[in-house]
Image (cartoon, rainbow, N blue to C red; front, side):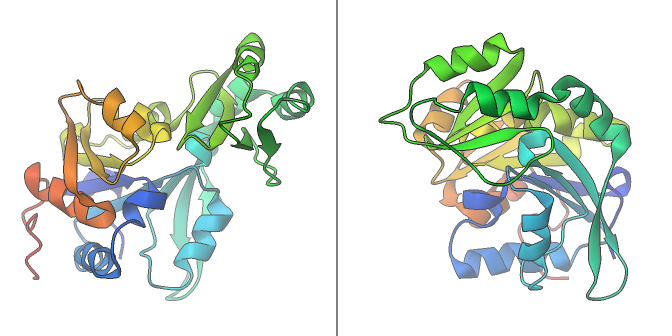
Length: 260
């Protein structure tokens, strides 16, 4: 049984690839089992560049825990996970939290695709995202002029892991959307941990929330968070880094992983 974020002792707001899904099988199992044993006090939010359909498929194998909420598509999607029975879940978009995102985006998708159709080093991803346009990026061929084009359109661009290029509504990314989520649910900021490993997670660490820059993070994120006091540079990789940070920030009475 999941716990509403406002009632949770602790909320984990985590990136997926390289973070919640990172590390050894044993480390992931340890974190996932720890969360599942404490669903009456722990709330789980996936804050990912992945789309809701991917997350639904990922969790349907019943090994990766179902989140309570999803902030997906690099902060442009907010959805609640509804449980219908033991095996069936659906993701329901939350228009009250997506309204501003949609308004800032307008109908920019087709304009962006046309404007960047011939941009060097960018290959359009086939998924039809609602409020973003995303590309696979070849860093050796990439023309930085694409950034100027996007900025000139009144939109934001984001490069992560030196291989992805996202076009987003102005002022929208993982961190700002998470901030709105926390405010909307009346959550205690001091009981939230954000976790990530690439530059598209930087905006989460800029919120000043307790943060886990997990072991194995890209150097660009390590450099960008060097002076952020609340961003812990974890030694352990991926899931184990999250457990390290939960204990270091003392975010749960069972922060050291003791079984109940």
